[in-house]
Image (cartoon, rainbow, N blue to C red; front, side, top):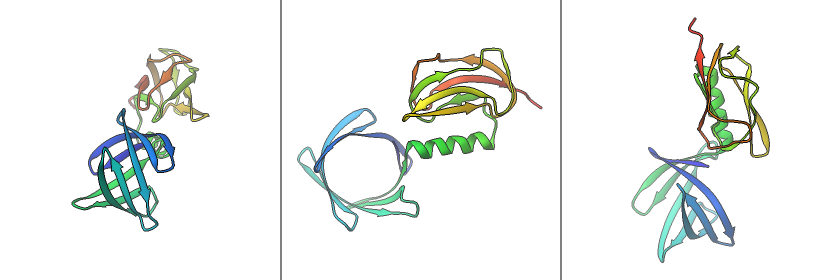
Length: 170
C-alpha cells in the first residue's frame, strides 16, 4: 500500500507478523520492529534497540490519521489498492488520458487491440489481473492505439504505462 506522510510518499508492505514482531518493507528496504498497540491509539515501537512512542488519531474515513510523537505531528493518508483504483477511475472520468496504466501491480491477461487500431470511448484496451480480480481498462475517449508497451502474460508494476494513444482532438 502507499502511505502519504505530509508531502512524502512511501510504498509499504507487511512482510510478516508474529505476535508483536512485524517485518515491514518500506520503499524496498526491510525493517524488523516490535509494535505494541494500546486501545487509546497509543503505540510503542522498538527498532534496533531504540524505543519510539506515537499516538494515532483516526480521522473521518479511517484511512487518514494524525500521528503525534514526542516532538512532531504528521498527517498520514493510507492509499490502498482499492483507493488507488478509485482515484484512477475518477481521473479517467474527469479528463481524457493518452496513456493507460494500472494503479496496482498485476498480470496482463488480454490485449484485445492492436497498434494503429481506431478505438471509441469505452472500448476495452487491456485486461489486467490484480488481487485475483480481472480489471478492464477502457479508452477514455475516441482515438488510435499508438503503442502497446506490454504483451499478454507480462507481470506489470503499479503505475507502469501499458498503452499510449493518439486522442482525437475534436
